[in-house]
Image (cartoon, rainbow, N blue to C red; front, side, top):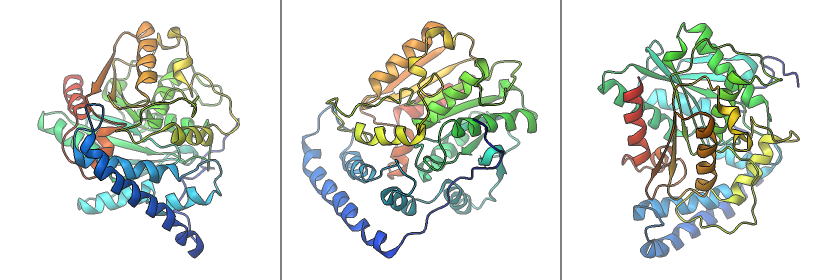
Length: 369
């Protein structure tokens, strides 16, 4: 596959007809009904559920809201409506900077991606982040999360900035486009900001974790469709929150989704939208790679965070065990009674209490930087 530079742009918020706007009413009704039902089921929750009654309520409507989003076709009205409701990553970034009285600092990357600076772009260390979703943009929870990492690092005397890569959402573009764009984010930081690999970290959540692992894989085993990127020394580290490293999703499996925002019915169409007609490989499904694939990763340490209520937890454990056999410097931390990407999602839902996963990440950054 040959992808022209700057040929694929991140999708802007689509226009919506009046008929499509009216068609939102059933979805809104579903959300309200789910929230109402959760008022009663929340009273019976046990240790397998959420830690607070509020989060139980907050996690129920999003499950319905996400289920009505189908990513299989870029003309699918459900996906168009979802993106109309949600601001694009670019818009969310501008709104965040405006709320903080800052000036947006956006970099136009090769192949249509963008990079948004959070914090001082001249900071000694930079965390390159790939947001989750594949089909959906980064929400305000991400910017609050990144801001908290920067503030905590600063309080500990560590100099850190975040470089958030805004890739083209699926299915407007499909694999390997997003991986190409993710590599270009790292290439920019290495070649244009005069930073050494020892001052660069990678991070990603869910689908973004898939991309982060794909970037690491490309450094040690170059992808045939992506320009090689030579790194003379290992990157400082990589953090993965609920990495989605197996895109083979079965909706037949019965599993308890209580306390988590993701279900198989959600994950399957998203993975199909990202892959398109491409075949699964070690860059899309790192969990299927042999342990030897990870032996020469150009990275010092990997921290994997997950929630106890993750429906992906078994596959995350499998991935960590697989990597550890080839790359021992990997740690798995599980937040008790926490769901999918809790450090970000909880903030998005208005719960500002620090998560266990977030606490572990901040300690890890303090030790690493």
